[in-house]
Every structure is written in structure tokens, then in C-alpha cells.
Length: 73
Image (tube, rainbow, N blue to C red):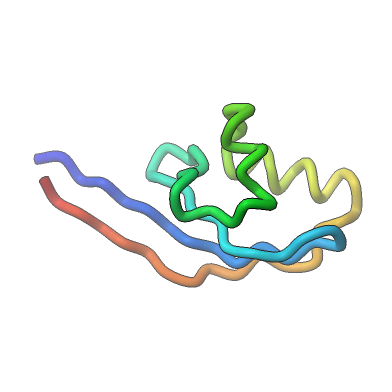
């Protein structure tokens, strides 16, 4: 059985704020991600890499988990 898990976060930085979704592998899921963060998905960044980027720049204000969806197929 295959399990698909998607987690949605609200990311608040000094530059942008919006929803960002990641799959079970940590990849950013483009369809459920705010336009201001889609650049990271297009570059192939993992969610953890995006958080590290904003932490290094001292732009990260908060990251809050909103929802988690699990699909069995």
C-alpha cells in the first residue's frame, strides 16, 4: 500500500507570507503553494532548504503547520 502525505504550512517572512505545501519527501508541492514561494519549487528546493534560506537571511518570522492530508492508494 502506498501512502501519500501532504502538509501545509503558513510561512511568514519579512518579505512575504502565504501557504506552502510539502509532500512526504519534503518537496514543495506547487499547486497548493502561494505564488510568492513557487520560485523555490521551480528551483527544486526542498521545504527544509527554503526554511534554511530564510533563516540565513534573518527573514523568517514564523512557520505554522496548518493541515496535514494523508491519502492511501
